[in-house]
Length: 311
Image (tube, rainbow, N blue to C red; front, side, top):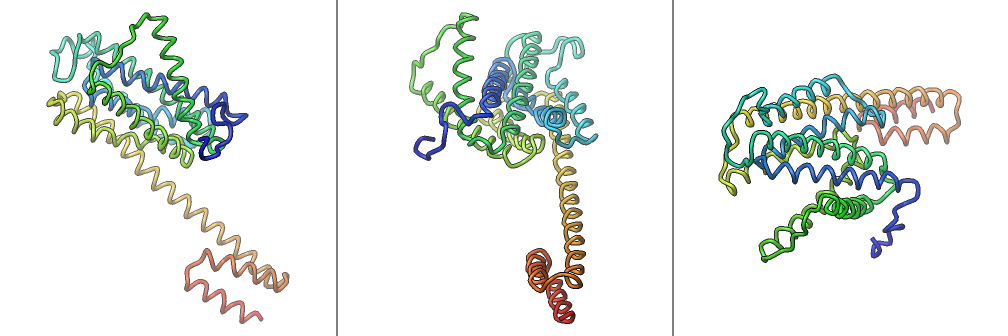
């Protein structure tokens, strides 16, 4: 940031520092939920639970930021929660089940891991909303730096309070894996912030659904495990709901843009007709030039023909 001459590299821009602090703290709990759940859940199960994030983000964006929220998103969120239940397989619903590949611990520990993962979903939601609230008032690197700083602070405090021992790397493999987490995590947070600055929180967060493809592939070819049938069903439900919301929302957005464009053209037409009768030659020339940029080639020829006829 110093090299790029970004102002306030450490403290952040005035007026949004508290939002950046919220982004850092909530982002920590979002990452912590994923890391903790990976202890007892398979990779695909832990990742797919985070897919509740777009739904909770859309609801929070509606309540906090006043962004649009449709009924289909609410229904999709409820169905996605059912998918999470299929992944968690709580004993009071499914009974005592055998441990499957990629999972560790008892059913109770797995249920706790799911609860912590859901806490991570809320943390990620807070991070998404705070980034969206900041918008372009801060550089994306400000968001990433605040996330890193507060993650370190909260981690140190948590380790002191819970008396968690410090683990030092003992092999080059350990160092390489930790470095990879930091390297790829940096670009993940950077591109996530850039996306949230350019799109609504609910729709921008839909990009995380791509993770399931890599998670399932890694679980199969690296860890040599296959998710149980209930987890696969939960994954299908969550991805189907997310895809439905993404496609329908994209279609609605295109319709709104077309309607808005038609309204703008109608207004320009009224102004052109009024200018032809009452306005000056300079005003008419300006309106014709602006319409040339908005209308197709054939329509522009009609405008030119009409203008010459009026002259």
